[in-house]
Image 1 (tube, rainbow, N blue to C red):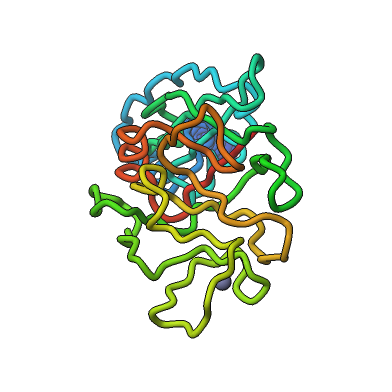
Image 2 (spheres, protein in one colour):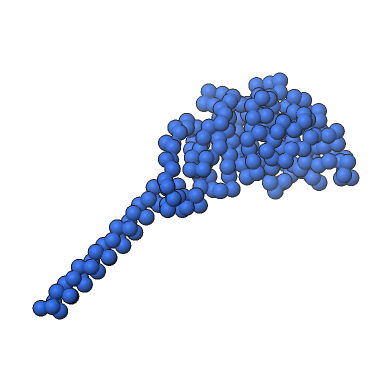
Length: 254
Ligand SMILES: [Zn+2]
């Protein structure tokens, strides 16, 4: 009789312990499942919970693909989206977005932009088209002094070119340091006022394949309501982009 009671009590206690472990385990995994996947969320599972703000609705059309793609990519903190207009092939809207600590995209700026006179889908030098797709931003530079750029900013000097010759095709070179004379297909950067007052070089044709297209930049408005293949925005907006984007940021054109 006593043995049966002891066994019954032991079984009851074990059930309570096992049940408790299950509940505790579920609580942890439920909490974790609701959190964004980041290091901070792992820590906050045991720390007091912070209220996660509601997702901001973003009307960027097909650009949602890029927002999803880079949501949990810790090397990308800002995105520049360039969305072609439905009514004009050389007009677009530029969206500047930044990710918060909950991996939510936040709209910093939205502004009008011009793209290639012949629209998107660049394939070769001189087609007056802007490349479509997802690109790096490789260099911040400008004729004007550094406006407070987050990326390292180079002030353009009289000896800087984007070379159009086979030798240094699609590369920013300084002929003060490289023994090379750039031909007529090259861009003498300091001559592009006001376009290159502030610029970001776009990583199109990263293999520098000759003839595929060169000198694709995000830059300030010029005189025309289109570009030769670049993306142009108002100068004050270009300053804002430079003050926001950091290394790893992407420009997605669609
Ligand atoms: Zn050259």
